[in-house]
Length: 352
Ligand code: 5GP
Ligand code: MN
Image (cartoon, rainbow, N blue to C red; front, side, top):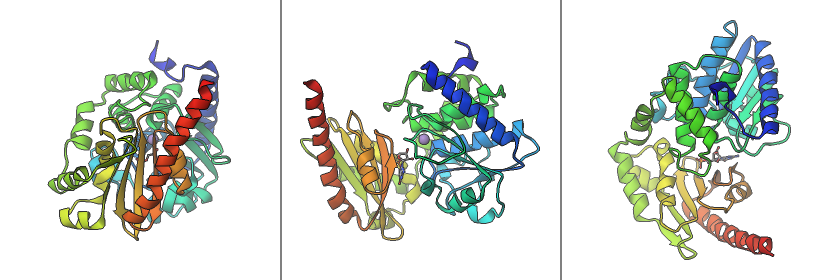
């Protein structure tokens, strides 16, 4: 298979993606000002896809003014500062234009644009590239494929579709997107397409070892001390099928750990032998709690996240809860127990 043939295996999906790419390219070609933005609390897929798209769009349409917008006023997590172009990321309050085109990456719900949402609303056209279950009516030109392991996969295929050169910097950003969203190629979403695109990116200069060093092997002591507290209080119930843990404000105060360093703690919780569903809660400013949910099997955790005003994928979802960690546990744990049993009932019906 030649590199330009990468993409979804299903011929219908392939055609649909091509049509989406064509419309996105035409939309971008007609723009003079383009703002490219990903979701609030950006992760490796959000930032990697965003920075790669900024480079791609600037290369292909050099007359356009391209801005790399953050959804939040806070700086992006420091662990991603090695990504090429990281210094270009700008706070939404510093952007005062009405862009001709706003490109939204790695989100299906405009609320996930946080402070950049008003900029999106002021834009002439909205382009969406995403892999979450789609929301009706968001985006004038889009490619949304839920089986794509990362937006980075789709962005790489967009570059190939346009016949653009995959530069080493673009490849590194896209590789970071894929490595992080597949949990280093270990989650259920790590499909053949993800490996194929990753292989191509490495051939074009991406460095998996640099990504690993920065994202997974450069933790401060404060974070490791927090992690030891979180590990020490992992609890299981429902015969070990549900595992959870949490970090409170006093844990952060005691250890001095940074909130934005905590993305990987859910992976420690999900590593419990025999667990099918994992929950990690952390206290965040404003009397709120951020929740990460993961499923290692068929259970769909996105329904619980949605019922709490959040969202995500079947196997990885998140939400923000107004209240304390204790209050969040009281709401979320019964909901997790219920979906475990719903799934069992569903299975029994399916067997008839
Ligand atoms: P994480 O738990 O790593 O923050 O997120 C897991 C997945 O769920 C990601 O795909 C992320 O985009 C999505 N997600 C996390 N939090 C929210 C949320 O509050 N709302 C929505 N719609 N999606 C979320
Ligand atoms: Mn993603």
